[in-house]
Image 1: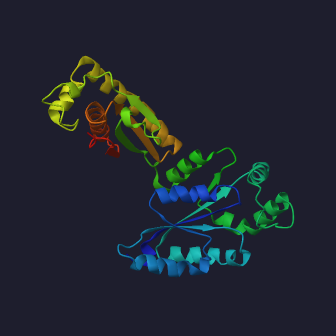
Image 2: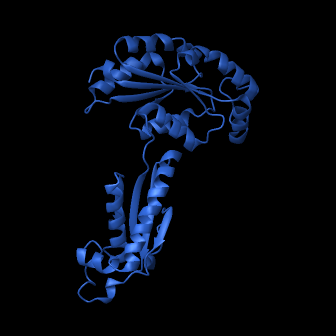
Image 3: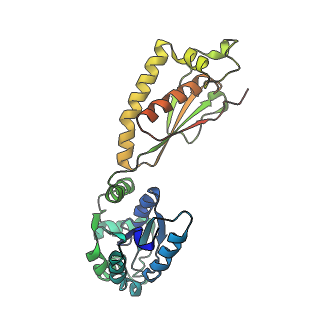
Length: 288
């Protein structure tokens, strides 16, 4: 990869408008993110990224107004990168003064451009300093009415053309050993037929085909899987649109070896057929 072939996103905007959230969204899209880098050093960063093994092809740089002297070089740097064939995208985050003031009051932070003055004075000074950067923007995102989740989704949509799908982790567990504290959705499947009471199945796990069939082939088991899959097919696109990066689902039975394992594997298989990225964990499957 040459330096000129990199995809570079510059993120700028008013302090408090959401630059950190925007950079988080780009990091989720596998961008190498650098915050508050003097633009004069971007050439060196691109050179290092090009020489990395493997080369770093996507770079995001946050630019703010804390160093006004650096901002004067921004137009020249961007023009030079584009003239050499680099794919450059400039995102500028805008926000109303009233909302910015409220955000500063909530966080009790001092505005970087008015350490001895008021937040309002800092906002107006920053607007003047950033006027040239704002004119360079390929996209101006108004964040006044956006929460962090919606802002991440808007940035992801702008940069990649689509929102980043929520990554799903489905984990089986045994209620005997406690519920997983990180699970956001929790399903109890202890009503299914229990292979523990079948001598020839007891020492196997829900990953075994016979065990899974025993637990899931009943009318209740078949309907359970249909309803859970339908529920997740309804929920996951909503989580995608909200910008939720990860979802953890817990499926529990008594010991965490048979029924919950079988349901977890079946759910994961169904979601993968739908094209969803799914991770599977079996917390208690090795317990006696």
